[in-house]
Image (tube, rainbow, N blue to C red; front, side):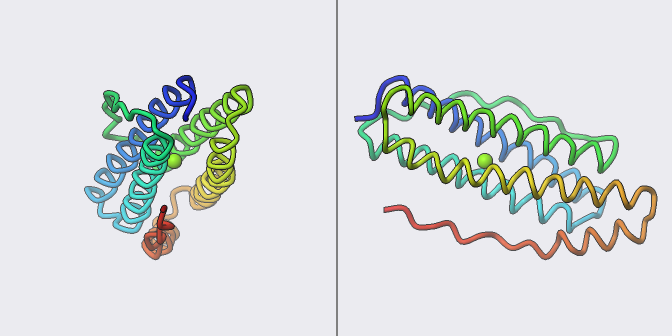
Length: 170
Ligand code: MG
């Protein structure tokens, strides 16, 4: 049985992951309107992954005999002044999610909830990747500065990102 404190914290995390999806979908729409379809593609794929993250928690709570309670999702911003600002927000957001995941892990340790610790290990690794990929884009945007040609090359690169095959959970 999933400890009650763990269930409540995971329900909160479903909301956090869905907010991530909301934020990235909002950013994707912003980039579509700026005709930077590669940036928009990268963000759409990212949003899709966030939905997958929410579903991992959703399924896990149900598998452990817990109750899923969906919370209200905040409205995300809808415009950004610069590309750098947008991706700095992506990184700041992922750093916040990393802290959420670490807090969940600490709770699972405190509750001696070993299945949750194993499940959360995947997210600990995932957050290392999320911060790394956001940082790489920020570094490239800093190099690009006002160079429009280089921006289009990055847009092309980000347009290559394909949706990841989510592992089938049994
Ligand atoms: Mg996530």
